[in-house]
Amino acid sequence: MTHIQKAGSFGLGDRTVKRLGYGAMQLAGPGVFGPPKDREMALTVLREAVFAGVDHIDTSDFYGPHVTNQLIREALRPYPDDLTIVTKIGARRGDDAAWIPAFTPEELTAQVHDNLRNLGLDALEVVNLRIIFGIHGPVEGSIEEQVTALAKLQEQGLVRHIGLSNATRTQIAEARRIVDIVCVQNHYNLVHRDDDRLIDELSAEGIAYVPFFPLGGFTPLQSATLSNVAARLDATPMQVALAWLLQRAPNILLIPGTSSVAHLRENLAAAELELPQDAVVELNGIAETAAT
Image (cartoon, rainbow, N blue to C red; front, side, top):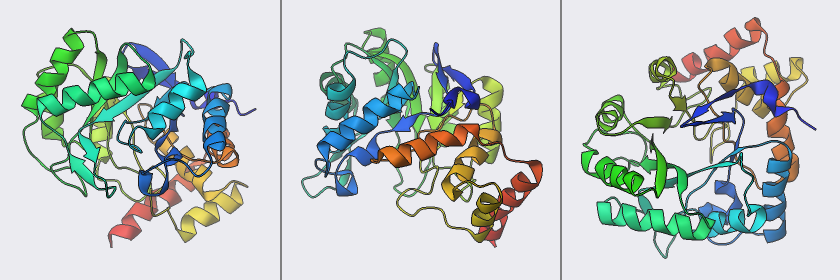
């Protein structure tokens, strides 16, 4: 069995989680919409993740919609005491699978209750506010009203901790003036490194950074340098990309997703991969090459 504790751990709210977790988004159907092609396999992947030591699962009720949360409930409830489930709110799905902003306080409150019901929980451990002023990346705009609504839900005991997703530094600072922010979930990987400075700032504050699309998302990372480094280390390119993220900063928590048990095991094995310094230097150059 892969010893994912080798990747270390980091604080997430008042919990400490292993730095290599699991993202449930890919358990839904194509385009993160509708039921999975193989429901039993989806349930098996979730159970295998927890059996392997994963104690941090990322999900949302707009995956499916409702599909991944219902699968998590069926596969894992009653939940292990050490399992931290993190969810996201801020959008809903149209009948055509469109991603539609749902960002008013009333809509956010309704989404919290949807997540509670479909996960079968009395309180959500961490709720990330997905900021959707821009589709392709963070865009400035006040989130005071939305964060205040979440703070009220926290006061009611329905939400224990609050995070942000697709956020700018200005928005993070604005939110922290209202409530404690325990994590930031933004797009970041070997190639997409806009948040380099932000990661270091959050690390100094003890705030977790959770990169989404750590392996490139719907367009998997492809690089001759990445492939060459992987071949030298007798690893897969995706394992190397995950190991690079783990070595990038101690506050990075990973949530790579998959609907395959074999791919899950491959991802988790990245916890045991130590990159030599010359490999790190080569990999760092990928982003510089992509920018030119």
